[in-house]
Length: 433
Image 1 (cartoon, rainbow, N blue to C red):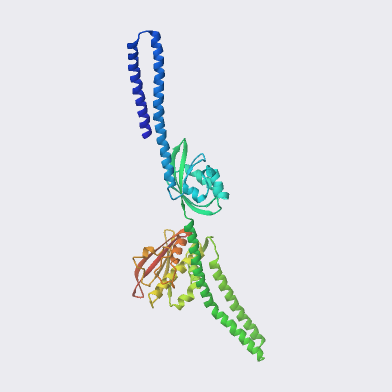
Image 2: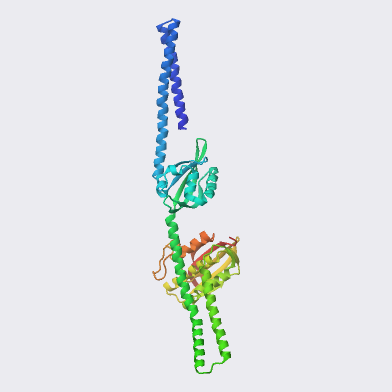
């Protein structure tokens, strides 16, 4: 609107100036002389004067408008440079129009090094450049803010940054559709997530090793007793061939049991992003196999109401989530010094989604903090009982990796005609992922 007003203003001034110049200058000339030769000469001079005056006038008016536009460009550039997040503006011709100082500082690249999309993608994305260019080409048709997703960016120094890009249309400039993209540097967040995942894995590994030791104690004792008995009978010359055969079979059975235990625990820690078909029942049983002995020692009883439901997802990831939730209940029982310790696990299907409900009778979660329990490092427990990453990692796994939901609420219910109070976690997963 301002550009139309300025143009109209210039045209009006030019018209008025021309009108009065022609009207009064002609009358003034006629008052001076009536001779045709002199009139022609004066009219020529008058024309040149008019051209000079209007040229000077137009020069100042246009210069003023150009300065306004230049000031606006400089203001826009300064505004971009003052932003804490990296910005890049580019058009459908593949030309990068500008980048801000934050962009230069984080990547190490100057504008001339990345003044085209081709240059930028080759430097920052290397082998993934062609895929990124396809994504960029699809942006020229967007009409609103668009979430491009997360990308690894290689800087000039060779360091890899993790950026989350958002793009929006930026109008048509010089006949070319223009896009402005804003990146959020989430490198530190992702690195912290890796550390927390490692911490969660190490905590689970410690629990697993404790359970391995517990499960190995009995078969190792059997092997020791059998071998000692064979040795003693051999010294006394009372050892029979059948006893040797039976003893070897017993030792072999114990060794096979030890080997199977190792295989079961190793499969839990085997990194896998592959989604497979499995039942919730076997997932629950595998979870109990890993942590069952410790819960038995703490007199914690599981009430199983699991239907034999098939699901396609990451089995080991779900096992880790179940273990975290079971451990959360166990810690609550210990912290509250409760004697009656029950954990209920129930499954059902609703709207083609699997719902896993895990509740306990440990008293529930304080309402003032229940909305914070999925935050990283948030814990009300003693340091000996937890680090505050178990529930955070559970939510990360369910939401980001398994494409599901997890929520918590305090509930009151009856069991064996006795009122119970505790926390209920609900995990909602697609049956086919």
